[in-house]
Length: 355
Image (cartoon, one colour):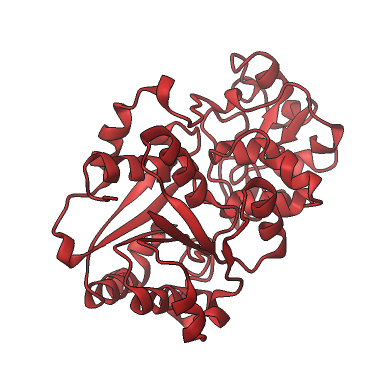
């Protein structure tokens, strides 16, 4: 089965499909991908063999060329983690009114041009209730009008072997002529629980301690000057409980390199790491005492691993001259590999997706 990945980023959909192809013998071959961020493209090409594939570039420009769309190799599966900032609780929530919110309609341009059998999309949880539910209603209607049965639900990466509380909306659509089907997060989670981990290519982690390196470069440690700010519970206009050493990470953000407070991003003490998670100094120390011990941020390698990518992913990107700041952004924007694998596993083993 051929696959086209839109808004590819660093290839979260592709990675899951490569692994499921290996584990189930159900071949899903990526034949084309679109991405406009140069650093993400570099990371993508550094980690996948893209020889012979169509690099579609800017999807906005690509869909304007009907001949280019017709020239794509035949494909049955279209995926896309379309831009989410405009729907996010942390963003402006302008939705379809903002340029990035229009990217869903570029997906529809691709769908209406070729009508693939299957469509698999991902976005932030808030998409489901944005604009009082009107946004998701428009998405459903567009897909249904194009001839698809549409199912969707919210999936948490922490349910699929990744210690990260990352809730994302997953939309799966199948051409109506292929019949109805069942799809929701509970069904996928139940199927995933039956997987034999000894015969699965995914990485499974019970806690963040499983991905944290014991020794890292000094540049990842917080300075004495910034630690009080990172550890604070906020100011008069913004109060939130800042905690470090979380066994299940907070959702990775595209802007984590900007060093937000510990109520938003993930920070870890040497005491926690070196005790293999037994010591949690934040449970017995004041903020002032915490500010006097070594605390660090995630490395790009660890951020990628929390999204289900292999431990050499960051090294490959780094060798291709991708800077750490760009890698943090890529990890925060990525689709969680394990979540997509779980969805595919359910769909394939229940013959909802067929060769």
